[in-house]
Amino acid sequence: MADFTNNELITAYLSRQIREDDLCFVGVGTNGRAFTLAVGMPLAAVRLAQLHHAPGAAVYWGNLLEPDLSVIPEHFTQDTFTQWQAAACPPDTGVKCDMLARGRFDVSFNSAAQLDRYGNMNITAIGDYRNPKVRLVGSLAQPEHFAFVRRPLLLMDLDARSFVEKVDFITSAGHLSGGNSRREAGLSEGGPALVVTDKAVFDFAEDTREMRLKSLHPGVTKDAVLAAMSFVPLVPETIPETEPPTVKELAHIRSDIDPNRILLKV
Image (cartoon, rainbow, N blue to C red; front, top):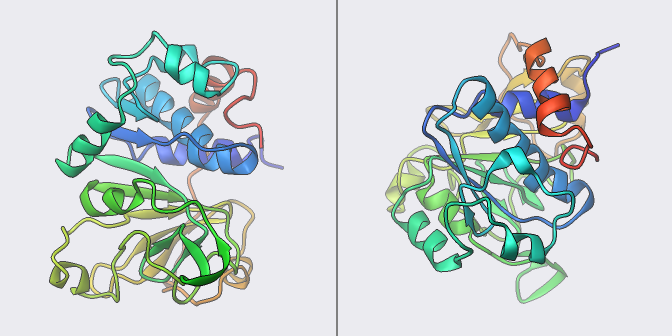
C-alpha cells in the first residue's frame, strides 16, 4: 500500500513543473473537490516548489500578488482576500488582467467541465449554447490563460463526461483541431501543456497536438484510464509510472505546507 495520498502525489508532480522565478496564477475556487483541484493542490505545489527547488517562484492567487504561502489562512472567504496583509499588493482585478494580456505569467492552473482531445476547454455551457442543458460559470479569465500563459496546466478528475471527443463550447482555445491550427488562428504557440488527473498525466503530441498518455499513477492500469474517457488518446508502447513524492516532499507537505489538511482535504 502506498504511503502517500493521491492528492500528495499530484501536488508533488505539479511542484516539479514549476521552475525558478516562475510566476504562477491560481484562482479562487469554490469548495469541496473543486476547491482542492483549482486552489488547494496548486497552492501547495507552488509552496512545495519554493521550499524544494524554486525559491524564487511566486504566485498570483485570486487577486493577490505574491501572498506569503507560509501563512495559509484557516478559512478561505472573500474577507480573507480583502484583509490579507501578507501580499505584495492589494486586491486588484485590473492588474491581473493586464498582466495576463502582457504575457507575464509562466504557469496557470486550470480546470474544466469538459476537455477534448486537443485540449480545448469548456466552462460555459453543456449542450447548445443558446439552449443549454446546464449553464456553467462562464469564461472568467480562462480564454486569456490559454492565449497568453506560457505553460497552462489542467487539473481534472478523469471522467467520461468531462473528457469528450469535442467540447460543446470552446471557452478556452487549446490546440483547436490539432496540427498548426492554433498558429493559423493567430494564437501563440502555447496552449495547454499538461493535463494532470487522479489516474494519469497527459501531454500533447508535438506534431498532431493530440492528447497523449504520459504516465500512469501507481496502481492504475491503462485500461482503467481509457475506460474513464470518451475518446482514445495517443498511447505510447511504454507508459512510465508517475514519479511518487519523495520522503522530503511528503515531510514538507504534511508538516510545513498543509498540516491541518486545509488545502488537500478532499
